[in-house]
Image (cartoon, chains in turn cyan, orange):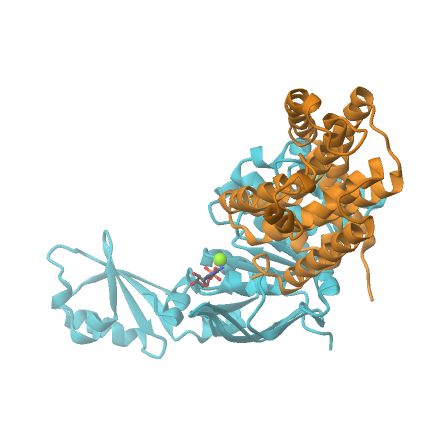
Length: 308
Length: 255
Ligand SMILES: Nc1ncnc2c1ncn2[C@@H]1O[C@H](COP(=O)(O)OP(=O)(O)O)[C@@H](O)[C@H]1O
Ligand SMILES: [Mg+2]
């Protein structure tokens, strides 16, 4: 049994009177693609920055590959590549110089290292910006620069704090491909994101935090299948004269919204579709078509965090 | 104990390259402004005062000016580098690397020593060429130059760590650094002062740096060279301790 890639043990962080983390404990399995989800202000960045040593937790312990990020920080930092949420630049050095300098901080100065830097630039489509000063680059490019900087020492664990926030669709796709590839090569990836479809598409496991507390932690597929609801879209012969008030009580409490030519209901999985159909006919609605689907991560998330 | 001297060296070289890349601002400009002081004070006052026996006022002034330049530039190097790194966020890159607080301190202070000496040397060369300056004991000169630059590099680091914006730094510079340097005996021997200010000067650590440095040139000083060395060394140890505590605790930069 190998050590967890990252182990959070009762991590608390107090900012004045605000408890940003209220004793968070969980492990990230080595080699997993792990999603850290939560609404704004949930404490995701605080958690990630604590792991990176950018924030000192008030109490608790974090181990990276068995190394305490506080007492054994040198080893811990060698295992960690962190892409912070805030964009960073340096007006004094070109991109290639920055990557060289960062390598130096990690004690890496070989020819292989310079080749790795060239490869990173190539892979992140930054080669033609290698001699540009970073504060002149666009936001999307700065994001890629941060990823290159995080990978300069070939860390086992790559942590990305909202890497795709405010990034255009093209770049988002590219970043997805790139992280998937790293994951295939055996890297542990920890990703925080706002875009739940992103977590659903990429992450094998997700943790959901809110208000500094862990709300859920499981395999993405388990979380989705364990979720008690499915979503039903009913297309009617005619929507003319439809009013929510005319629905039977059973339908009314399961009704979510009305769109151009259909109604959306949220139905418990143990309620048979027959039952649903009979409720619909009791309400004098003639059904033209009906589609059912499982909940998306977004819907599970909203249920768990009570954001709906 | 594990060390990362390559990392420390890389950070030091980066810090040196940083000021070198804007050398007009960080080296050339301070040399010119010190020479302006020399021109103005030297020319106006030169004939009227003999501070130390056998020396013209300009000759007396030059070591003081060199020291003042070293002090201000060493301070400026660490403090502005840190505050800019905070502003642009790139201090994070160092924070994410396996560089220890001690290595961080040595790299930054090392670079500010280089900056201080580079600027000081610029002023000194003009002084030597133009004003026939002696150098009785180059070792004392070098020792005080390096020690004082290290101290001010350290003070600049403390200021840079504690400041959240340029305003804080400017306040630090205008209300502490500049008054203390001007009152340190750069422009006069403290024996020329009224008794109260003489006593006051003895509480100004910069006074000992200037006085010890000047001793290296003329083998004359206001107080004993060993007293100056002792006070300066103590000050260096104090500021080193303060910075290491701030860095180990992560005050402001790892909060
Ligand atoms: N440096 C700080 N000082 C004070 N409060 C902070 C600081 N950083 C974060 N917080 C607060 O801690 C909470 C969690 O923030 P954060 O970890 O950034 O959330 P997330 O990344 O999930 O959006 C928020 O309420 C935020 O305002
Ligand atoms: Mg965040």
